[in-house]
Image 1 (cartoon, rainbow, N blue to C red):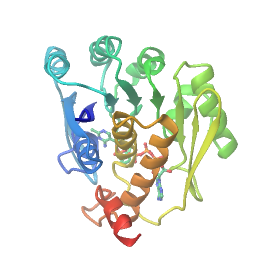
Image 2 (tube, rainbow, N blue to C red):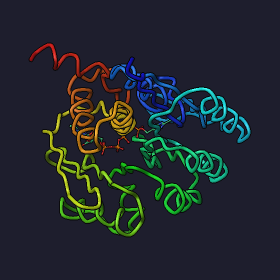
Image 3 (spheres, rainbow, N blue to C red):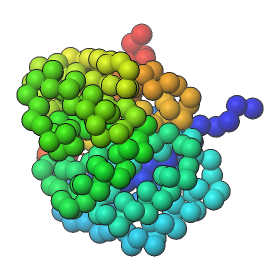
Image 4 (tube, rainbow, N blue to C red):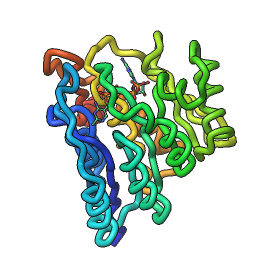
Length: 268
Ligand SMILES: Nc1ncnc2c1ncn2[C@@H]1O[C@H](COP(=O)(O)OP(=O)(O)OP(=O)(O)O)[C@@H](O)[C@H]1O
Ligand SMILES: Cc1ncc(COP(=O)(O)O)c(N)n1
C-alpha cells in the first residue's frame, strides 16, 4: 500500500473558518492529505477582524509537537501565525530535527490590518526560521519587511524573490502579487530559475485566508510527493478556484471556498 500523505500545520486558529488552522485543515482534506495541527494561539476573529488573542503556553506547544512527532508520520509541514520569539524557538527545535518539507507562511498582519505577531519577533522569524524553509510565501508587505526594499511593480516582486533566496537563505521563495493592481501574479525563485504563476484578478472582497489556503495547498502537494514547481502550480489553481467561488459570508472580508476546485472540475 502507498503511504498515506500526512501534513501538519503549526498556526493560530480562526473560529470563523476562513483562515489559520481551520483553513489549513480544510485544504488538506480537500486535497486528500491526512491533516494534523498544532495550535500556537487561539484567536477570536471573524471576517471583520481580530477581537482577542490567547497564546498557548510554550510547554503546551512543545507537548503538542511531541504528541505528533512521536507517533505520526509528517511528510510536510507549514507554519502560519507564530506570535512571539519563545514560540519560534520551540518550533525551531522541532524543525531542525525533521526531514519534512517546510512551507513557511511568514504571517505578520491579518487582511483586516490586525497584527498577528509581536513586532520584535519578526527579526527572529527572518533570521532563524526562514533559512530552514523549503519555500517561504510572503505577500508584498512581508517581502518588503524581509528584504528591506519597497515593491512597486512585477520587477520588484522578482527581485525580492531572488534576494530572499540568495541573501536571506530560504531554499525557495514565492512572492505573491495579491496586493498589487491588475492580474494576480506570483513569482517563485528556486535558486536556479524564476517561475511565474498567473491568474486573472477576481473582483471580490472575499480574500480572508487566501495566504493560509495557498500555503496549505503547497504543503499538501509536497506531502503527496510533487516537486516544488508542480506543487505551487497546483496550489495556485486551488487558491484561484477558492477565490473565484468564494462566499459572501460575514460583514467584512469574506472567506474563500475550500471546495471551489471541485466546482472547476465539474465544468471540465
Ligand atoms: N482578487 C484576487 N483574484 C485572484 N487572485 C487573487 C486575488 N487576491 C489574491 N489573489 C491570489 O491569492 C494568493 C494569495 O495572495 P495574497 O497576496 O493575497 O496573500 P496574503 O496577503 O498572504 O493572503 P491573506 O489575505 O491570507 O493575508 C496569490 O496567489 C494571489 O495572487
Ligand atoms: C490565525 C490566523 N493566521 C493567519 C491569518 C492571516 O489571514 P488573513 O490575512 O487572510 O486574515 C489570520 N487572519 N489568522
